[in-house]
Length: 166
Image 1 (cartoon, rainbow, N blue to C red):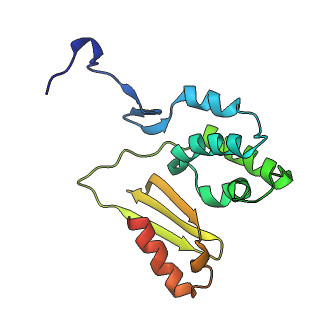
Image 2 (image 1 turned 90 degrees about the vertical axis):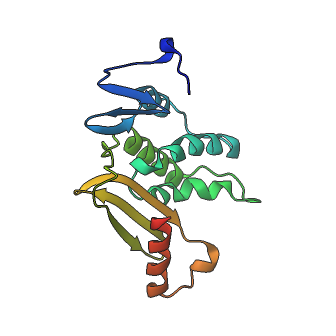
């Protein structure tokens, strides 16, 4: 394995890596990406929704209940559905932008430490939080799949546990 010295950095207090800033304090969204998010205009068609959701989805681990917040926007991506940007979509868009631009500092996981997974299942979706020493490492959520809508509560609890552990 070889490294090019001109591309190496040593004794840095923080590292910008794949849209994140990693420091001793934790992991945050790169400030240059926050600027892109705040300046993003409201989508006017499905293609623009997909572009925004691609960027937002990359940072979903910073947003608690990501799938619940984005539900009105993601519903616009369904096939054969007319694109109508309504008040719910606008509200979800603004909420998501706010949550992404004021995202918490996620803890850097210690592979030798103990982890805690907190899960919650409801008729709307599945939610999970990965913690270590009561510090958030990542959030995870998703909408229920069509066949899961009729599951009994105890079955949904099993589904969310499996989803969170994957």
